Image: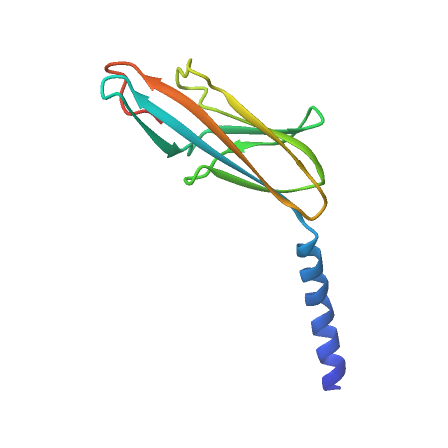
Length: 128
């Protein structure tokens, strides 16, 4: 009876581990290169709260917002993905929105690093 109970409990756990090992994951990381013209200095910050759109084959796979660390993680099928990040409520004329692409094979974890470059003009504030 104990052996049967062990087998009944262990088989679903083994199957779950096997499924996770075969998962294809896409991690989108966004950052903002914030440059202050007055100080002549730049700082790279997480693009927290930025809008992100992930496409594959011209179709939107996910449309969301980056978390506090400037990240979004998705379980996806193998294929080619493009992620675009933007701050539509801010005037980011210097290079935004920004995008990057990656091709993933089955069971692979891929990361897209997307950076928005922002040049602050005098009196514009501290950015996103």
